[in-house]
Length: 89
Image 1 (cartoon, rainbow, N blue to C red):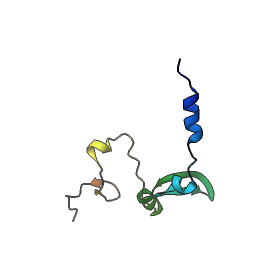
Image 2 (image 1 turned 45 degrees about the vertical axis):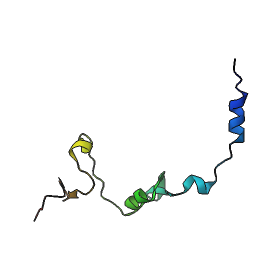
Image 3 (image 1 turned 180 degrees about the vertical axis):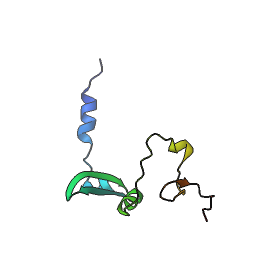
Image 4 (image 1 turned 60 degrees about the vertical axis):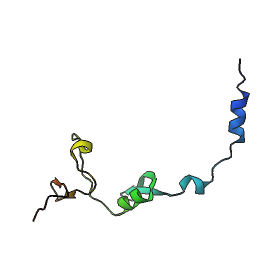
């Protein structure tokens, strides 16, 4: 029967990551409602910039956005999503 001691040694030899290594190229955001932190979240810098820009959030539950859209680049007129090739003027 093989020994399990070698597995234990691998974990002991592994060095711990520093805080800098854990969060490299990421941001940690706190979500606050009524002056109370309700959630913390780690994400990449691009997604953090999106969240920090106070986006409009639209519930797409019950749709299939991966198939039918909206996709990146689509426009939103406050009620409907429009593919980039449709001119509303």
